[in-house]
Structure formats: structure tokens, C-alpha cells
Length: 138
Image (tube, rainbow, N blue to C red):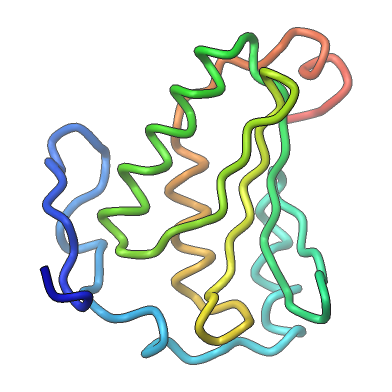
């Protein structure tokens, strides 16, 4: 398969409509300034803007109720990533701790597509750990 095409994913299993997904390569999106990123993240309460080796990234971390819930979230995120043809770094550690890092690898920065992907990932229903929910306002 040509790297410019996306893998076919059944959109009926998601809340994403075909019109929401622009069929563009990640490197075709304009890189956002740090100020633009700071403005866009203001309304994204589950995400943090993190500079890692001077590369801005969107990062979301939480504890799921159990391992299966963590993997369910990862699998749902993977479906959305395939639809967007934009793939975040997904990590499960300590059996229920999940971290998602989003940035455009080819640009070493953030684009509107990164924020769109994060907003779609936020629509995934998550079974959070009760302890995590008590310590975090969502």
C-alpha cells in the first residue's frame, strides 16, 4: 500500500464522519507557533502542552479502572488514528496507566491536525480508576 493512503477503517464503528477527515499527509499541515498551541489547548482540560527536547507535544495521562479498560482505550485510539492517518505515541505502563503523546513527527511540532486528533480521542468513553477520578477533575 502506498504510504500516502490510509488503511480502510469502518467509520460506522466511530462517531467520525468522512467529512471530518481531510485526506492530507501530516507534513502538509502548517506547523503552529507555540502561542497558537497555547491558545488552542485552553479548552482541552484533559491535555497538557509539554515541551520535550524543545518539541511541543499534546500529552494526556490517566489511570484506567483495569488493564482491559486501558487496552480498550488504546484500541479505540488506534482506530481513530488510522482514520486520521496520524498516529500518536500510545503507552500503557503499570497495568492501568495510559499516556497519549501527539505531535507531528515529520515537523517536530504541532499542527491543527494534532488538536483535531486529540479532540476525537477525547470522545472515547473511558472507564477511569475511582482513585484517579477522585484526584482529577474531568
